[in-house]
Image 1 (cartoon, one colour):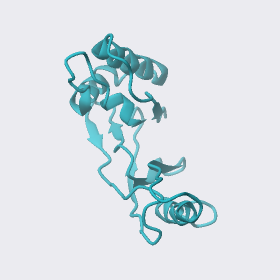
Image 2: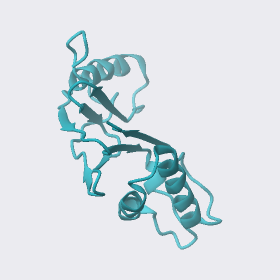
Image 3: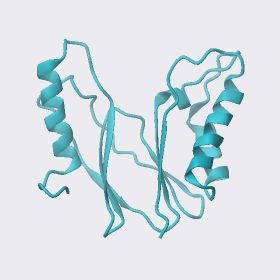
Length: 161
């Protein structure tokens, strides 16, 4: 929880109500919200329709943070759940946009989550910048000449000690 006592689920609920009041019908936002507690080494999180992030453990094991939730801006009274995971030294949180997994190649095959997981397993011991670059390189090589249809955004947070 934050200093004010508001956790990620409650924060998403508040944001959702504000968006429902201020945006036109049919507009929505996806969002993964995580609070990292640096004293307990835990990430407390909630998800509003965003791709489910991965926690890559030091040994290369990849765990999906499977908590989901409704997109923001759709139903004003929706309540968002919360979950948490502990992060050991060397663990890495990977948050990504759908442009990563939904990149298509010339044959209309999608990059997909399986290829992303394979890339994360291969890159797990690398510095965060190298992980981002390695995934972007793999996605672009997969897509080849096929035009990119969405943004490719990655956020990597690694516990070092």
